[in-house]
Length: 208
Image 1: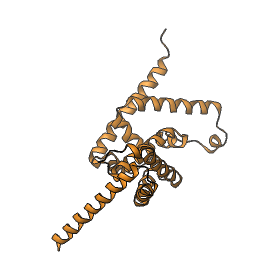
Image 2 (image 1 turned 45 degrees about the vertical axis):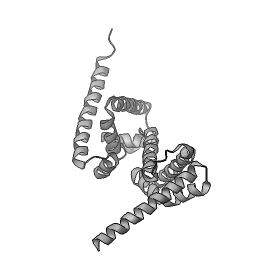
Image 3 (image 1 turned 90 degrees about the horizontal axis):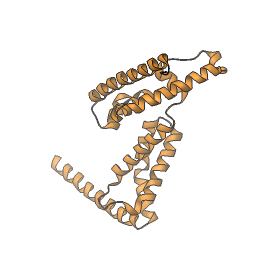
Image 4 (image 1 turned 90 degrees about the vertical axis):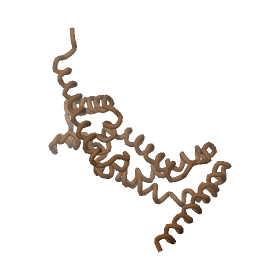
């Protein structure tokens, strides 16, 4: 029974590979039916992936559309060995990362990340001084994040800013949860050190 099941799976995998190779050849020639076939096969899986990443249906809709727009744009230049699943997942993740960078420093995320908050009066009518402080905090955090190595910056963004579960972030980054926790700890420590240095530099003021 086990041998037969393994053979059936292998046969199904071969059929899938042959089907995808046919779609790829047609897609490279600009066949819209091939594009529709790929879309129908992968749209649910890609949508579920970006929905889990973003936690927002509206953003997941945009990311799904953008991913397949990229497929249409690059179809004629796809290498013959391209497999659609890894290609689409990679594009979807990259588009998510790009989208996330543009929305990284929203004030609600920053307040949550810093563990601070506002009273109700401040939220209704923020003072000019408070607005200036918030803008300064955004600038300082952005500079400190950019000074980190890419692996540390990415894990901080996923866990602290985008508020993803650590196990989910580990899967996205392709590392073990234990490795993610160590990376997160190092990232937080280095980020805090950078922010502290910024504060000390501001306290000392410009040099004469």
